Length: 220
Image (tube, rainbow, N blue to C red; front, top):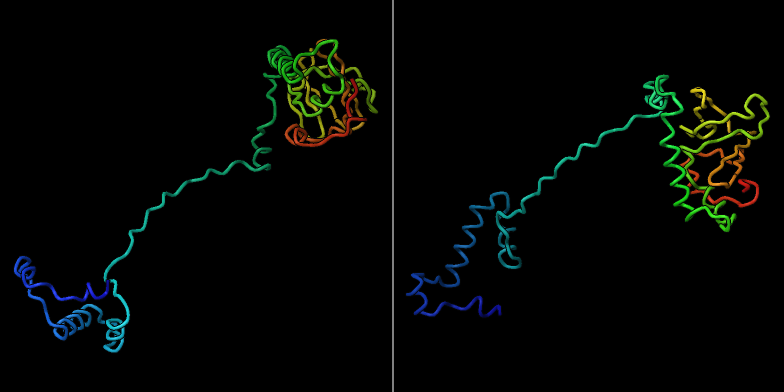
């Protein structure tokens, strides 16, 4: 292949292409002169070394692709959310009847989650599913508490935090009930489950990924 590249053009090709082939020494002189003119930053010795041993790549560079800058919006931090009162329910919205549709959605959600609540349903299977379920919209009743004033309080759960349940009572009052040292009863389609608040001190999103022990958390 190298011999073919360095071979002299046939005379008939020179006539057709209108090219006059240079002799070897003439070609070397032309190449050296061309490189000296274009590679001014290199010494003659370096140019001669390139000509004899290496291929030379002149004026070539890949075009850089322009990267589009993606603007990322920053969300509010915890302090900003508190200052803006993002999670506070306005007094005009503290109406029991406003959350009845949410309660109906929650009941259908639990029925779908448990594949229907029937008398012959396995309580253990239902218990495991309820442990990780979302209770927003459930009607909670404080069955037991170390604080007697909480006992008997009933309402729709509108907000669950790590340590408290916020419920709206039928009297349109917002009650904040600590989970710790309280037991909550939940009833749906004849099934009654009890939530031991001290074992439930997690956010609902964290609870869905947690592995619970069956015993001592919820009884059916």
